[in-house]
Length: 108
Image 1 (cartoon, one colour):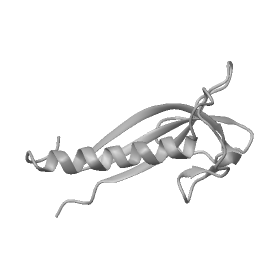
Image 2: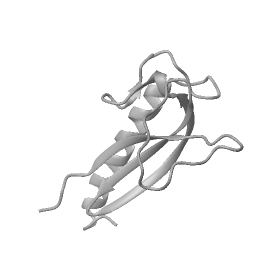
Image 3: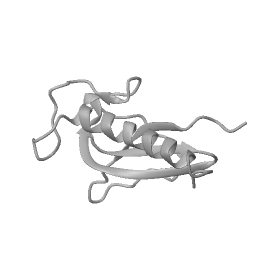
Image 4: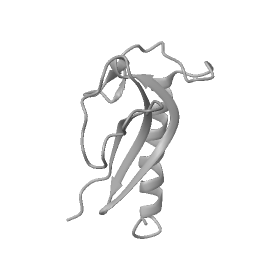
């Protein structure tokens, strides 16, 4: 039986000039003062999509367990939207798209 689809967010550290990036597959502890790009990871039927959200955050402002920003008043980079609302909407959109595609057969 196939695993249920799963949406998670990953933080990827922005590499400063002269800094060595973390080797692929190696995990590094999230540093509270470092800046990270937010990526959406969507896994379904042995497929994985890793998509940049286009937003950045300091490691100390991220709640890994809840997969959201600690401060609910944090906005997107343009200041127009709540960052947590954007993340929740993206997660909902992934699930809705998956469920809609089930109507047409196996999602790809």
